[in-house]
Length: 70
Ligand SMILES: [Zn+2]
Image 1 (cartoon, rainbow, N blue to C red):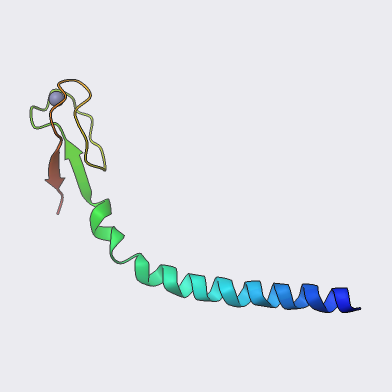
Image 2: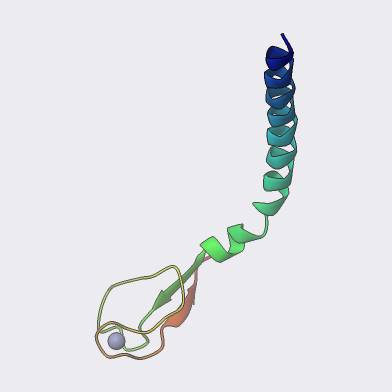
């Protein structure tokens, strides 16, 4: 009987935690939305490869240029 109560408490705690985590995640999604629109491409356009994070061109090694999409 005690064991069952403990499981119930843990489940209840998890429910509460996931609710709190959900609320926190909702707030966080606002900021990374801008970052998701940032694309990077080689300034020499030697490849059509467009990356979603900064780095260097895999062909010429130049630093990727940020493309801002509207
Ligand atoms: Zn390049």
